[in-house]
Amino acid sequence: MNLLAWNCQGLGVALTARNLKEECFRKKPHLVFLMETKQKARYVRKVRRRCGFNEEWIVDPIGKSGGLALWWSDVITVNIMFSYVNIIHASVMSDAVSTPSYITCIYGPTDEGDRMLCWQEVQRISNNISTSWLCLGDFNDILSQEEKCVGGCLDLGGGS
Image 1 (tube, helix red, strand yellow):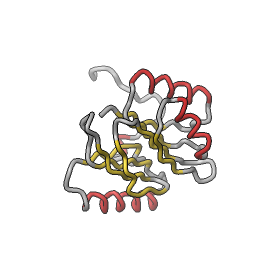
Image 2 (cartoon, helix red, strand yellow; image 1 turned 45 degrees about the horizontal axis):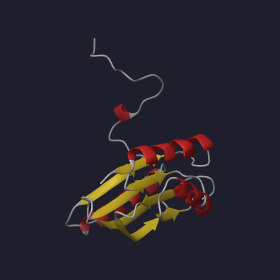
Image 3 (cartoon, helix red, strand yellow; image 1 turned 180 degrees about the vertical axis):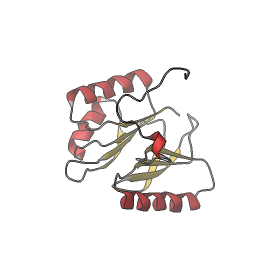
Image 4 (cartoon, helix red, strand yellow; image 1 turned 90 degrees about the vertical axis):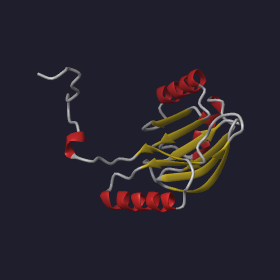
């Protein structure tokens, strides 16, 4: 299954919507997961149609932050099991392409307490899954301070 997951940081920017449309037509994903759309369903639906998808599940943002969208092609069947502000959890089926049995799309909260609740929900989901499962998104979580990067910390050299 061909997937596209993107923290678009605001789908209302014309360049973002245009780049998304180009990627969708070039890569032809079966499923698209967008995080931080910052747009209500009406606008997200309009962009979805321009990108060539018929099916959708949208979680509206709260105020001007957040917002999730899951779009899929007719080649797969997606059954949304539940969703809330940070998670969309679904079963996925297809005769045409190899798909995981379940997919959990996550946009992790930046607040540490909310993030812990989100991880507890992911743990609850995992306890009920015994087949293939894909968990993807922006978890907004790090294992150690070394993963944080401020400024020009990209080191492409081979060391000194």
